[in-house]
Length: 242
Image (cartoon, rainbow, N blue to C red):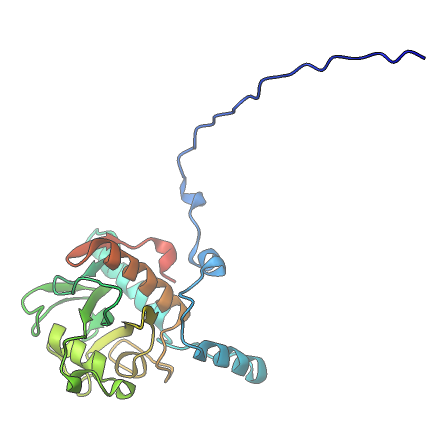
């Protein structure tokens, strides 16, 4: 039997080029959808695992950080809207330049005396207007030991707020915010003096760690800081706020 040889036609590959359609409002992820896939800094404090295990045994509980963080964000949104402004964050003019081998104390301020827009009356920011999501980051390497050694009792962030805003947060509940740091090449999200106390407008869960939603926002602000430095104002997309 004779086998027929059927020639195979070689076709040149065709590249298909499509235009990317402009994103519509429905294409943006909600805060809840974003949180499902968000991955925080891998060096986050181990206490979250302990807290998760406690939830398994004891049932649902509040998470760490600000119990009313969603309410804080809603109040901030209303304040920005009342001025017809986009929701923005601000890296303070007095924040130090970032070098990965140095150590830093940071704070994100949500409100002062219950106000989401305020006039700074003391510290390095005296005379300037502040808005919710105001971020202060200072290098601590050259600080005196008395300003940074007893970190377990909140000395670092107490010194940061005193230097930046002129408040002694051990003697006032005016400052509602969250504390974080850069130490040993990674971010840290704990602060006794900012995260572990009730303040005007802020309800703590008696946990020194920021809540997962706060960490997500702090990570975004930190990226803005390391990419753009101080004196930088930036939009905050809605999916970073609950």
